[in-house]
Length: 61
Image (tube, rainbow, N blue to C red; front, side, top):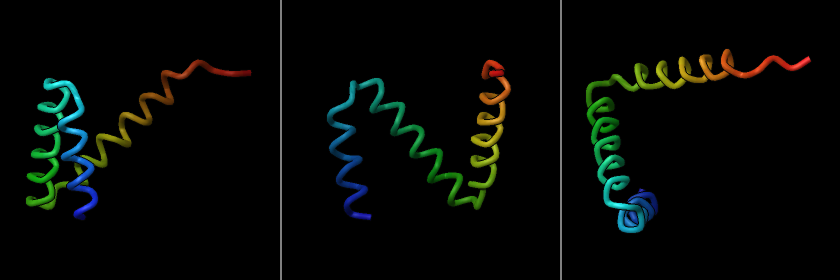
């Protein structure tokens, strides 16, 4: 976990301020979802987006 925190800290200092702030918000949302045992909702959104992406791909013959 310490390695993850160190990497995140480094990245937050490297990214543009608006990107770093957006990432802070995303991370806060993920922590909140985990605290409420609601991460399965987040995974569902990811799967839904993957399906939509597949539907948008051009058909290959």
